[in-house]
Image (cartoon, rainbow, N blue to C red; front, side, top):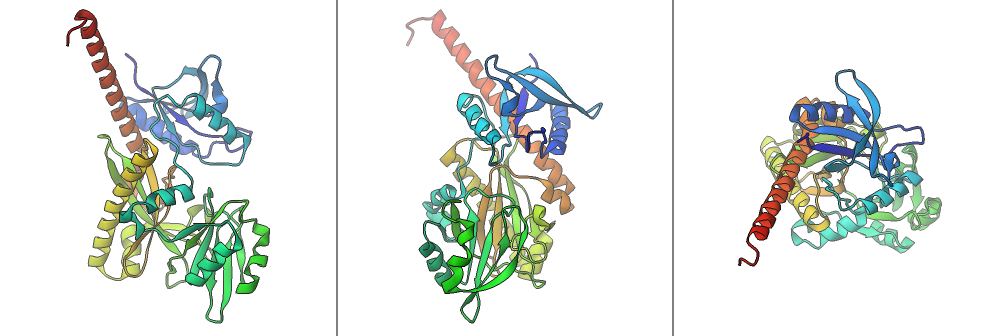
Amino acid sequence: MGQPVLGILTLYLNDNGLLEERTVYQKMTEAGRKLGLDIFVFTPDDVNYKQNRIHALIFDPATKRWSRKWRSFPHLIYDRCRIQRSSRFERLQVFRSKYGHLTFLNRVLRNKWTVYKTMRREERFRSHLPLTRSYESPNDLTEMVRKYPLVYLKPIDGTGGRGILRIEKQRDGTCLIQGRDLSRRIISPQLVKLSSLHSRLSGWNLKNRRYLVQQGIQLKLPNGRVHDYRMLVQKNGRGAWEVTGCAGRVGAARSITSNLHGGGHARTMQSLLSQWLGDEEKTKAVKQHAEELGVEIADFLEQSYGRLCELALDLAIDRNGHIWLLEVNPKPAREVFAQAGERTTYRRAITRPLEYALWLYGQKKNNRDKAQVADAQEKANPGTP
């Protein structure tokens, strides 16, 4: 019998075949070979639906080259497809619909609003969720601005800090607007009266673009830069959830978000949290609580939405050490750990999905073997109770 085969499902970023995480896939292929796992990469555009064959992208660790080869469907599929506004994403929906019966390491997670509402129903998570509303009318924003000194406007399916606005009330009653446009460019700070807020934001088309209004948490460091924490929770080689690592992210100057793609930089959680809280014992306790909470959240979301293999949780920790869940990312990058100097964590983040894939393959195989034995016994002894 041949090796178990894992297909990494992704999307091209453009019509020229650009892959966003090509280097990561190379590392996964190399690690998979050492584990006894055959890996190839493909997109929905590489699938021949009539023959059920895939024109796969295959990396050769020996030559460091990529090549194409027609392959059968893999035993397992690792879905790395992020949302994008393109016909390529529409074709992904068709693929998922046609081949949804196959074994995926991870199913599709819902949008930010649906995930928030799902988690809000669980009392144990409520105190960790900044109050969030769906933007249906200007009144939704007005009420939140009046209730909280700081609010954020976020696209319901946004990634990488695109299209996020920060609105902070000033002592004189005006509102300071900052943010990034949909191309991730920093918007110059603007002061407006509350009565003029909606007219100033009219060009953002908040309702049609499906925005959320979220309670803001004060996270500015003494140098004026915002920060938060990216926690990676993954299934291990025993099929159990485990925190792989957590790193701090510090935003670029004048940025309202900490995203690395937006110019932010990474630090170890220990150093950043110690600086923020100023107490080593408190830092240790908060870090432990955050890891316990991360595993609980991952387990709950998997029960709610189906099989998952990894989640990135964006966490805010306020001055009191209280943990807030800002966002859940089902297709996390791993570079934050490399940038923070945590090479061991980075390597573990790459190999854990592969170890989980092998475990899942073994579970499926054992179930098939048991079913075959039971079927053979039934045929040999028909009618036996």
